[in-house]
Amino acid sequence: MSKEENPLIAARKAKLQSLVEAGVNPYPNDFKPDDALGRVRAEYDAISEADTLAAVRVRCAGRIMLLRNFGKLTFATLADDSGRMQIAASRDEVGEALYRDVFRKIEVGDILGVEGNLFRTQTGELTIRVSGFKLLSKAVRPLPEKFHGLEDVEARYRQRYVDLIVNPEVRAVFRTRSRLIHLIRSFMEARGFLEVETPMMHPIPGGAVARPFVTHHNALDRDLYLRIAPELYLKRLIVGGFEKVFEINRNFRNEGLSVRHNPEFTMMEFYQAYADYRELMALTETLITHLVRELHGTLVITHQGRTIDFTPPWPRLTPGEALARHAGFDAERVGDRDYLEERAAGCGVKVAPAWDLGKLQLELFEALVESNLISPTFIIDYPVSVSPLSRRSDANPEITERFELFIGGWEIANAFSELNDPADQAERFRMQVAAKEKGDQEAMHFDADYIQALEYGMPPTAGEGIGIDRLTMLLTDSAAIRDVILFPVLRS
Image (cartoon, rainbow, N blue to C red; front, side, top):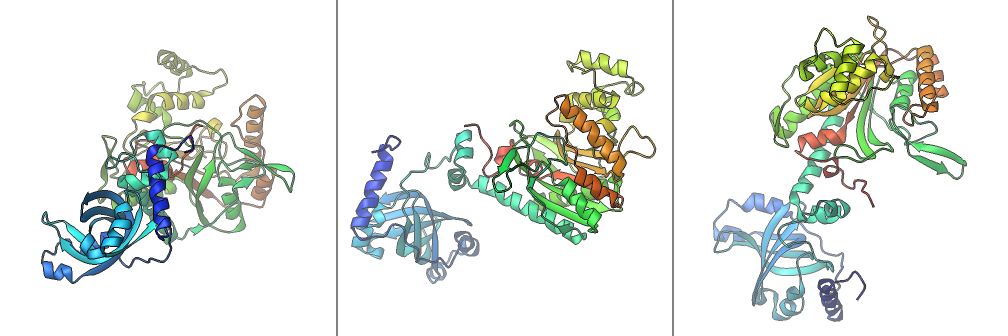
């Protein structure tokens, strides 16, 4: 017995060996089910006539989730991708030798193919009366806790395959995630957006303020960066003549882990020529209300005990207005640096000397307001100093045409009218490089090729990124980002 092997595993391996010695192949691949258990239940669960059910013959396969032996009769619950259903096998029906030498050696976790006719037990349970069966896969490791599922959170994430087996509600979350992405894709395509794929490995990290992962390409003998955002490549496509593009794919940021952060995450980014950030706000409102209605049938949902009302129109506030409305700041003084520093000291926000007024407002907003924005709220008109890729407002060059969408206290989307002035963009990149040289590991590099692309002329454009993981959390009532990522990054 190996160090990790316990008596239960040893006993299962002994049964496996006895099956092999009896001439049974424990891992065949020649049984093809004709029926899904969920479909059989849906079609026949309302029928009570014994003769009608007895005339229905089905051929199904699934994993044994529950097993009860009564001497000459065995009941089991079989589960497949569509649902669960009870089966009943008797010694008289399948034959004494097969029943004794094979069926009685089947255990919870094994995968079984069965065929037979339907009937109802004395308690009224719709059941398959097994007349033929085949062991399709012998499980030598027992499932956890029989009926109660896998409850240890870390174990669930590390052994997601077990989590999916024993917790049907987890599978439902990922079905919803898949449907959510399908709905987004259909919504964008219906509005003329072209789905594209851009590189995952970049020679220069860009498109967001974040610390990248570094890898090395041996054949080229050069370092590359896992992308932190597809933005600069998608905007190159706008330069090239595609006027509406979107991409749903992975991004990688070499940052911390939290209930809302995973180093590998999914976003949908899209760009539209001849549009501005106001048009994207309207589009975003339409998209997300569409998703909520399709998935929930209502615009008022509950997430972790809190009610979220998606009914439009959604509020649109500047960071200063948000401080006044949600944190009790004097609306007449949110542009007064001395006042803001005084409030910062009173609430424990440490002010860095290099922060300008806009950065100070934003830090106070993130500390005092962000987590309180439960129902959808657009925060608009961010300062230039924290928006290196955004277009300046024509009315006020100190701010940009940018918004972030907050729902459930989280940032869900970030969007802006794009900066298409190559000289202005080059200066913003130089500011980022200066910040990097002073030790800011998240500041951007200077991307000369992107500046060259802008010099060919990019039409007025608006672009946006929407976090798929956080949106899935909201719409599946999930508490942590790891609940909606099949194989999240975990500490060793």
